[in-house]
Image (cartoon, rainbow, N blue to C red):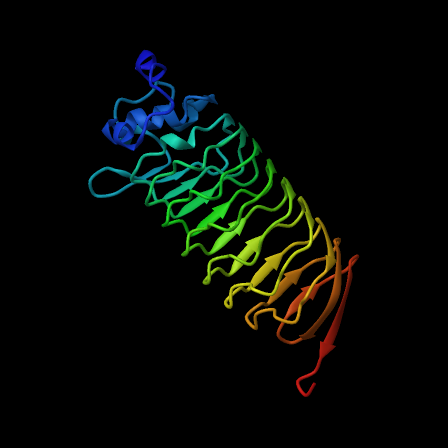
Amino acid sequence: MYTMIHSIDPSVGRIEKASLPQHTLMELLTSALECREVLFGSRGVPDTVTSWKYLIFDSDSNVVAITWHAKALYGGIQLEWIPLTVTRFEANHNNLSGTIDLSRLPPPLRHLNLKFNFLNGSIDLEHFPLAVEMVDLSYNELSGELNLEHLPTGIQFVMLDNNLFTGTVCLTKLPKSFPFLYLHNNKLSGPVDLTSLPSCMQELYLQKNHFSGHTDFSRLPISLENLYISNTQLEGEIRMKKVLHDFHAENSKVTIIEMNEKT
């Protein structure tokens, strides 16, 4: 098995991937991990996928969820080999490192959680599966610029905070039904346009970045409950009803004016 796996072309397409048994895909997925025995025991790599630990299967014994939360995993993770039937992948709170390929995730994937690791390098946010609803890559060492203009229409949560992302971000082309975006504690810079946020947006966290310039806050969606722009160089004025909103602009050049119900 070992020789076969290391002879496979890493640029293999979906047809070739679909032809591989799922236990082979699991071995490819974990091939760069150290001490991966925690995932299947001390008897060696299993010959059947159902012998792997921390997996959830459907009635046909296909893997639908991989739940590797806090399993003391070290090394790299080859996300392009996640079995095509997986809808949830969780490997948060580990010691995963290296770069990740987000361009070849399985089409039915809905949840991707890799927070609290040591992943690095840039990421591709333009080719997520259409089914994706939640992506959490927070608390890593990811870097590069962020393109948020081509997110799946049904996505609900994007958590990219506490990384090393740089450059400007466009917030005018987010999906129309997108409520939660977390970009805080990065190295993002430049102005931000908040005039075309999704009408259902509820939480937007931009604090602890290098954003700067005058910002028009007059067209924030009514649904926005939490807005954090503290520790930036943004400028402007926000009028808010205290009972409805939780807005924070400490250590910025933004003034928040609290209005009562009659104002």
